[in-house]
Image: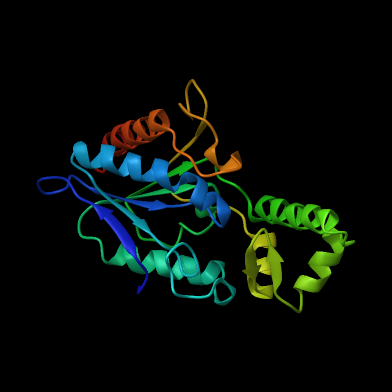
Length: 224
C-alpha cells in the first residue's frame, strides 16, 4: 500500500498490534484526533497501533472517485499482511464494512453502521445543500443518476461503483469479535458519538476508554 500509515510503537517489543480502521468520509475527520489519543494510550500500555489513510481519504494522493469499498478492503488486507505478531483490527462506524478481509487474531468494532445508512446520510446532506442553493433534487433522483455518473455528496465525489457498493454493504460476521457503542454500562464505551458533531473535535475520556477496552479484550480473547 502506497498510502500514509501513521504508527505509534511502545518503548519495547509490542505485546500486539492494533490496526484502526477509521470511519468513512467526513466521519473520519471528526474522529481522527480521538483515535490518535487512543493510539498513544495503547502505546503506553505496550501495544503498537496503526492508523492508515485509505485510498482517496485524508492525505492520500488517489482521487476519491477512483476508490470504492473493494479497493479499501484490499488496502486493509495488504496492511494486515505486513504486520508481524498478533493483530487486532479495531474499526469504527463505516470502517466495520471493510475490515473482514484482513487476516487478524481478533476484531473490535465501535458503533458499526450499514452502508445503506451512511449513503442515506450523504444523500440527505446533498438534497439539503441543493435546497439552500435553490436547486430541486431528491434522494430518488440522485440514486438514479448515481447509476451512470459520479455524485458529489457532502464534499465527496463518489463513483457509481462506490455508491452501488455502499447501498448494498452490510457488516460481515467475524470472530472473535467485540462490539461496543458509546455510552455507559456493559458493552458501551464512555464518550460521545463524535461522528455526529458538526466539526472535528476530540474526546480524551473516550480515547482512554477505547484503549482500556482494547487492552482488556486482547487478554480475554487470548490474543496476549
